[in-house]
Length: 333
Length: 82
Image (cartoon, rainbow over the protein chains, first blue to last red):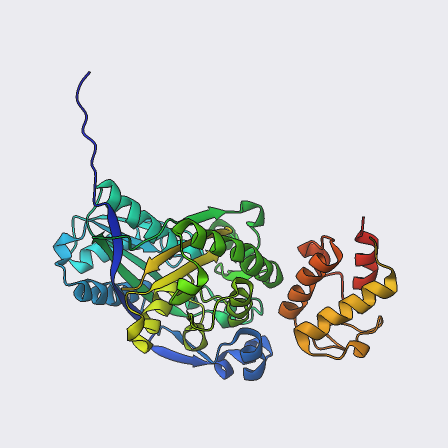
């Protein structure tokens, strides 16, 4: 039989560093309340958002991704040339092809790294971390950059009361590499396509082109259905992620859920019965919901505010349109 | 064991109090959850999930939209008990 080699990589992986970029403009609740016939008070009470960050017309998802990834690569102390793969989780690529990742890889000086986008909505970053972990341990890569990058303001309809006022723009990045011990626990991930209609774009591109009235596709959601799934079903996923990584809630330093809505975060934390000692990421209050970018942005902020948390264990969980979800326990960089 | 309509109402009122702080005696059958009791759709969902557990019934997402008054919710839950 002809010989065929198979690669094998490092036994363990970890997140070496993080980078962050938020939209250049602060958008208050008063700025968005008018078109949805609402108020600052209603938005705060309903979502926990005080303000959100959005990008001006000349700032795009690729720019946010570039800033965040550059910071992460520098903080990791490795040469861009050492990066083997660039993965961008996003729903903000304004063209079907080429990927944001290919453009980002070029701008970062990581060519000829493998480059591809992941379309897994608000679970995208956790999918990216799962992939980076697997790529490195299989020997397909040594260093991987995982970015969640979104310019959701491009696809937010200001008069939509279901989701538009939650949305923000930003990017968060992680450099993942080999480690002497376990830095990324097993991923618990999956989907429920029976709820494909629960959140997503309101119309296909083709329909928008063919409609003489125009109307670029925008995001919408069935808020109640998403809330129920995000809290009660995702609480089960979070518990499983803790179980498979052999970590109990009291051993966690931090809980970093997708920043969908503060009410979801609060109810979720209640369902998990997290001890008071566990730091809970609440970046949504001043960043908004940035889909795939929300977890790395929230983790980056948490570490800035609590540098002593570095080296501790964090449970991160993403969930969103698909419906899809992903969770893993990771060592904080 | 199936609860009576009165028991369901009392149980539901308790869940509403737990979630919103609204006094149980305010939770009467003619009241609308949103208009009269000022309960938003997120709190509503929490009450629904807790009611499913308390009364051992299923209240699907698309049914929740039809339960606009306390009376409608009580009637649905009472009927849904196997």
